[in-house]
Image 1 (cartoon, helix red, strand yellow):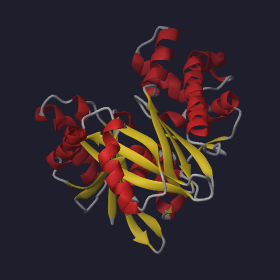
Image 2 (cartoon, one colour):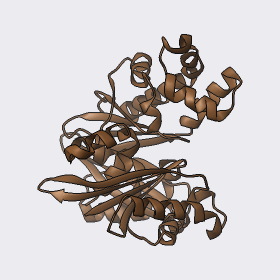
Image 3 (cartoon, one colour):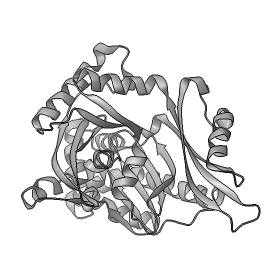
Image 4 (cartoon, helix red, strand yellow):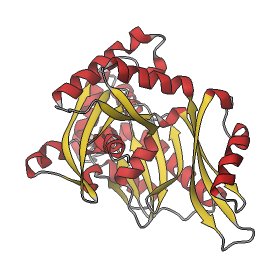
Length: 337
């Protein structure tokens, strides 16, 4: 079995998968809201206690037996870029990345955990080249995420980025696609090709920004604004379309960032334009959110189903379907080989 835990700023999600042939079967899952600091905000271990308690409680309530879990670092704290090298061997690329990483990441190499993945070899162009995905994160930050899991009485099996997990659970295998994860505090934008992550970016606009927009527009408290957001969303027919009016500038802002990411990928990485955009994250579940982005972007936008690659027992289909957008990262983590 394999367990993924996604620590969001408002909720913790857990998914327990068991291998079944070439696929996976869902054994258990759960989601729990909490209030407290994220690991990167905690000044000491004491401030990690609420999150550790929430993880421990969720692990117990979901009846997960394994104590080994896979976790992810928020994309906003990860440095990810594609680097091009000449046609070197795999071992030569490993050496080159180690020697040249300093010029690609904004923190000292000795303070970072650095990984790389070869995403494409082009021998059909002159000169030939190899595209390498370089990913780096702060050792200190990773240690905090590991610490909170240990405080919950569990053990970390693997640590990766949210975008890698999203691509694993949501990306189609035979095309170039963009995955946009609308979280509470940020939006992750990832481009996958043939099921592999080749580009990622994070912007500091998320569900909280949508809630603030409604709160300011109507002059109401955040709790009521949150209720308006989830009930009316981008519907033009509900509440005379006034919630849609409040949310539209934020949606336009997200759409503009998506356009910039596509343009950068096409111009700087010489990449193929994504055929579609797959939405995930809690904010993607807002009424008519995908229709609004389809209009702003002029391309197909669909809500992703992280359980599309997982076998579900009929008894649990109904219970998870309503929360599916929340589980994309946790499912991808649990699918980690």
